[in-house]
Image 1 (tube, rainbow, N blue to C red):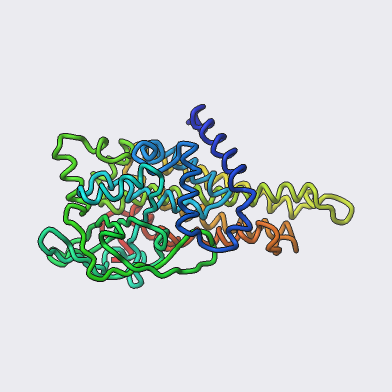
Image 2: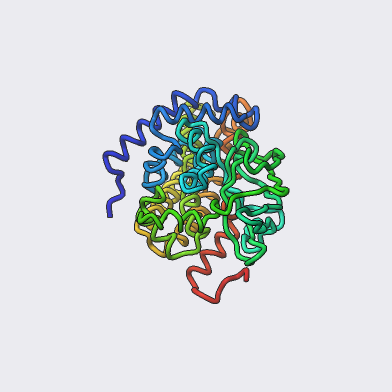
Length: 407
């Protein structure tokens, strides 16, 4: 089994790392403390990444989402420097993938923003009474001629307050089935309210309120895919994703398949945070002198460094194991992505805890990045499925049909 990245993947990682260290590392601590990015700042971030060929426009997104390994490298490297930036890509990618398949009016409105890098999207699924239980969405879509009329609310949605486009989970009032609608804010206006959280401070997060929002029926997920395939194109041409991911979409429930990549990405983002905490701890352990010698010579410090290094390396291996399953379209992709997210999220919390212990009083200082690492790490165990739900999903995939713990 080959655990090494290809030469192309190494070049991508190294160039991205250099870019992040130059563009964002010098400003991250000060800017993150100021709270959520404005829309202008979010767009400016997207423009900077486009210089490196990373974006959500139709050409760039095929590189980012078409290779799960590239996506994984990106999430780990960005996680190491500034994880607050990740939802701009991870959550924005879902509506960006479907935008070229929507109604003509929608495309005329959105595609120029996508192509110029001014597009900010969000994935709106979570509700106050349906966090991890996505089978009971109360946001409704009522058929009305050529439109759906959407009513309801979403909460804890990344990019909500700055997004111009949303991929919204709804329940069809006529059929009772659940699906997703692609919505543009000027065409189907919604209201937002900002939410504040313990970590990822610069990532805009909020509630979304839909009241009588009219959305063309052409913008329903199943309809978009069906219309695109009618032209004779295959699924790989329609969506900018890998063959393996296409296989998952056609063999699993769409939402289940769509969440495999974000969960693997959350794992590797946690790895990035943990790696940053370990790197800082190694430097401090070599330089900090107590009782006449560097603290790196103390046995308990070396034990904490060992625990951090093993947890981070194990998390990284689990993350890339999940990505490998997604690349291959393997039915265990769901299981591995859940396992990876749980393990890495909890390992990241422990690693950043140890990093603060190693730094002592300096680890508590807001002048140091350790407290940010710790807060960002704590966030990793909740979004895209809490650790507890991920453990239950894993148990179900291990035991098989009939063993769901929450049905």
